[in-house]
Image 1 (cartoon, rainbow, N blue to C red):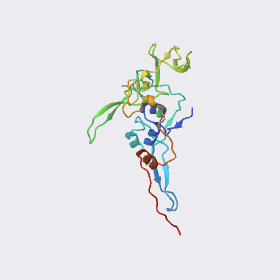
Image 2: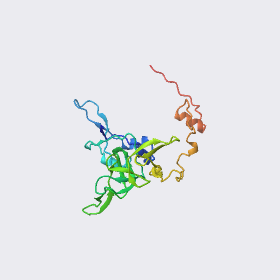
Image 3: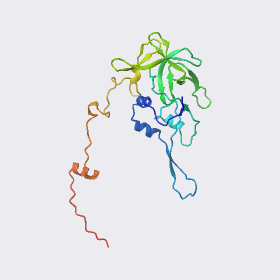
Image 4: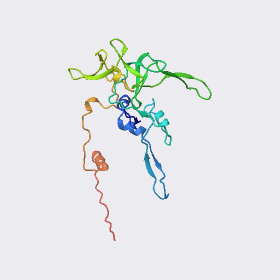
Length: 249
């Protein structure tokens, strides 16, 4: 299977978890700077847009992501195996296939689709020194695991690891089915979880939110006038001044 370099665009499940517009994520992670051209110095500077980013466990819209991808920083190429259809979700029960926690099972708490990573709660941990100025303060933190080789789904009927495939039910619903037992592996309800709420139904709309009933309501009316003219019409201001005559010779 052909490997591809890390893409410079946040994936679908990163956008879903952020609950932010894709245009904002693109603007937050975009880096544009100027570079001196080669040759004579009277030529104008060239605008350069960064195309490759280093994706880690930090989300693309965070300040940590920007620090790891500061202008001028260079990273070694990271090759990612393309996944045709993403099949691991937050809340899935998986079993680890490699490493010190091989054979243990846990639940997926985070997805980093850009690197084919998932983080399993309480497993594959590493001690990290979080102290400053010589202080040693170690924190145990979960490390990412590759979905292609390091984890596999667990069949909920017998709690044993299994391979799976996507199929359609008689009602036309697309589901994951265990190849070993033929039972459906349900998608967990925590798939709806975002950085703003655990469940969409439990979210209380805020004053600045767009009300669901007004999403399809058209509030903009195009007019053949400038912004200043429109303000004058709303405030009842009428222009009755006559400009003086001017002559061009």
